[in-house]
Image (tube, rainbow, N blue to C red; front, side, top):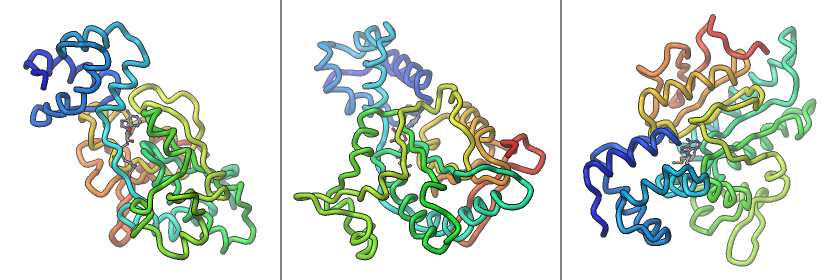
Length: 287
Ligand SMILES: C[S@@+](CC[C@H](N)C(=O)[O-])C[C@H]1O[C@@H](n2cnc3c(N)ncnc32)[C@H](O)[C@@H]1O
């Protein structure tokens, strides 16, 4: 394995942080060696310094591949369970209620899955939405949309395919969901068209300015900011504030919190679930 000097580690660590927000701590420096060895070979680099020089020439394709190699894409359907129960029990009814009365929030109800990896999170959300819509005779399927983003083009392409192995579907999807929302294709399972139709996938780097992507009722950003340093977390969470409708919710992963990150959100506890809403007076979206 190619040696990684302290200087090379510092250079690559800073470079990756700048382009993606991902922070590889000292104790995980081995990740550069284990995950980038193929990369070195493919680019004919004999050392990490050579790779660093190539990267700093600013070629987008190379930067992308670095981010892809250094990100963790672990995911599963209905990860942790309770955030999805909370979505159906509380967050979707609240989003529907925002469309009534005086608040004038327009349809559709919009949900963002930020850092969607191979797609299990947005597809789980879409299944919850479909189930919930059955009890809402006044609402049509196209009145709820899901936007799924990730920095990795490769993982997004996989997500958009919606194909999963027996193991990936296995214990995470019950019989009813499998019959209803999956189609057997050869040796794998494919998410059915009805569910795929609810989701738009796009490449987006949370560490770069978001541009206009509209307002959301719920932002799922689970098991993503855990890889960022404090400054990046603050920047991203602050951007989320501007993306939420008033009363909208930010859902983080089980081991993530906004403690010491932001005062602009208040934690709401609902059984085993915790999510965040903009603190009263904070300038969340006007609608
Ligand atoms: C561990 S997965 C989490 C997947 C899913 N949210 C879940 O909880 O199961 C983290 C995902 O965040 C994405 N990610 C990391 N940095 C990102 C960034 N700067 N912008 C957008 N996505 C990012 C990674 O590519 C990866 O797919």
